[in-house]
Each structure stands twice: as structure tokens, then as C-alpha cells.
Image 1: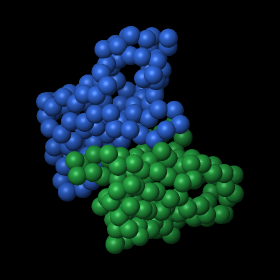
Image 2 (image 1 turned 180 degrees about the horizontal axis):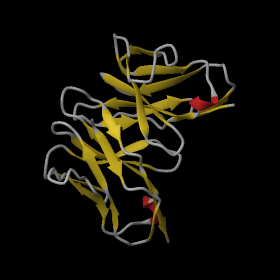
Image 3 (image 1 turned 90 degrees about the horizontal axis):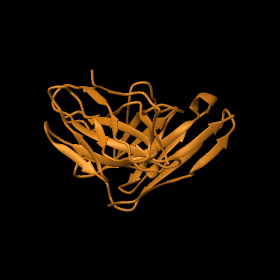
Length: 113
Length: 113
């Protein structure tokens, strides 16, 4: 079946540190991949996406590359800020005629000043 | 991009009662979705709501417990019926764009006592 696995949190970093949040997936066909962010007390916001192999999604300094050979979509940022503290969700949408999204369990990031 | 809102933002309800959550989008959208996010967990799709047809429920969710209405292309409601403490969750609505992205409302935090 289709699934998304994320690294467990919480992840605690100092400001300006490098961030990696791992995400791997299992899917039939060629899914689209997404990262969503949920700030405290708010709903989910789309952070970035990639729709085919080797695509790189990027937004607000965050990047993720769709790696079909390793079935991964790891989220990276070169220098985190306190304002990046949030929960990050990796998600996939299966490709064949359905709009169902499957979400990972989320990774909480805490950035310390 | 379209704005999506939900009402109420939070509520505390007694077991055995029902709560109707409203979701409003400021432009017409074809597909709307309802999710549940239990404390500390990921999102689980409850159902897909298309205007003019009955909602499609995911495994484990039934219409008697979670009736959904979709009277037009900008509005949907989810009712949580005969509530128990296990229904305490955040309930989120979302819609799909033509670019195959989902945008989420801010969520309704429900506590059942």
C-alpha cells in the first residue's frame, strides 16, 4: 500500500543550524510529493512540492528533491530561524485518478535563539 | 490564492451531543475534503465532498457518524454526531486547486467531555 515515513521528532536546533528532516515513501505509480508546515495554533500550509523524479521543490529557503531511486523527499534548510519552529508533514498524492493525500506523522522542529 | 475559513475555531461539547463545523472558501472549488488530526498524530482523511453528490467516506468513517453537506461550490459542513471523548480532535477542511495542491483551513479544535 501507499505510505509515508518521517523521522521522529522533536528536532531541536540552534538558530542558523542546518536542518534535515527525512521522509521516505512507498507508493504505486508515480506520486506527487509535498511538504506542509503547521505553525502553533494554525492549520497546515503548503511549503513546497515536486511532481516527478529529480524535481526540486523550494520555498522560504527550504528545499526537497524527489529521489525515485531512494523513494525519498528529505526536507533541508541551510540556516534555520526561530520562526521556523513548527510541525512539518511530508505527504504524497497517488497518481492514478484519485486525489487522496497520505500524510506522514509529522516532525516537530524547535529552533532555539 | 483562495482563502478558506472554518467555524467554530474551537468548542467544548458534552458526550452524546452533535457539533456541526462549517467550512467556507472564498472562490468556487470542485473538491473539498475533511480530515481529522488526533492529538500528536497525523492527518486522516474522513471523506471527500463534491458538490451535487454524496460524500465519499474513507474506511473507518461512516455517514451516520460524520454526515457531510456540500450545498454549493464554496461551502461544506461536517457534523460530528453522538460525540464521545474519542472524537476529541482537530477537524480540518481543505480544497484542491487545479494545480493539484491542497489548501487547508485553520482547523476546529474539538474537546468532548
